[in-house]
Amino acid sequence: MKQGAAAMTYVPTPLKKEIVIDSIITIHYFEYMRDFVFRGESHDFWEFLYVDRGTVLVTAGESDFQLTTGNIIFHKPKEFHAIRSIGKNSPNLMTASFTSASPAMKLLEGKIDTLSIEERNIISHLLGLARQSFATPLHVPSVEQILLKPDLPFGTEQLIGADLELLLISLIRKPASPAVRRIPASASVSEENSRENRLDRILSFMEEHICEQLTVEQICSAFSLSRSSLQSLFHEKKGCGVMDYFIHRKIDRAKEMIRDGTMNVTEISYFLSYSSLQYFSKQFKQITGMSPQQYASSVKGLSQSALSLIHISEPTRP
Image (tube, rainbow, N blue to C red; front, side, top):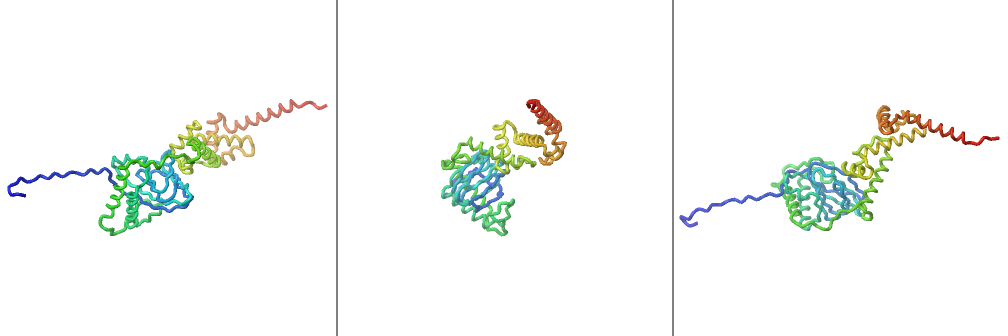
């Protein structure tokens, strides 16, 4: 700078951070068996699933997607998601869950893509850092909190967050891949038939457990469905809620057993896993308009009337 020249005024330019990872929940790498099934969960943080090898059917909310090697899918907070292996080879899967309050995360809602070579390298680097840094093993799904090893090299935790942010930014910046599409549960049937088949399986499951105190949560878990998806299916196909349907089937079974006459009302109540005879009688009357005892009497009366008609119609023998 020449003597006497005016001093320059430097003005800093802030760098906008579009994506910021606030915390890590879990990072896992699984080598599953060919018949692997994860019946599903939902939670209040973000998660992505990357298929390193194999083919899986992923349920996200109310939709099913077939993912193969190189595909990635994002699940937003509170979105129900489940996984099932459907390929010939055992799947290798990587998952990462994390929190982020960045508004730009909305761009990853429902995101399904195929990773480029550069993005796969980011995944590999991230997994390498996780293996070096975590005291908790990457292959144990029950880990609820990551424990870090002591005396990590300088900046290790920041590098993990940076890898994640770099991956997310890269996926947002590039056009969506056309390689992944929504599919029915079976490629050979329509989505409507798939829903019908699923409903048939659920109805069979309910019949098999008619003598138990079955809950909505148990049905959702058995079929990898969210509560809202299950209720929507029953309202659409049966015109009632799932438990309303199940209760009516229980009472139908009770009526069959009363007509059969092999058990008394108390035994039927116990057989169908009602908490008390009083509750069974109350529910029976709500649905049929009469108590179990009144129904049994009406059935007996009808049977006697039918027998009388048979006797009357018989010709008199000479």
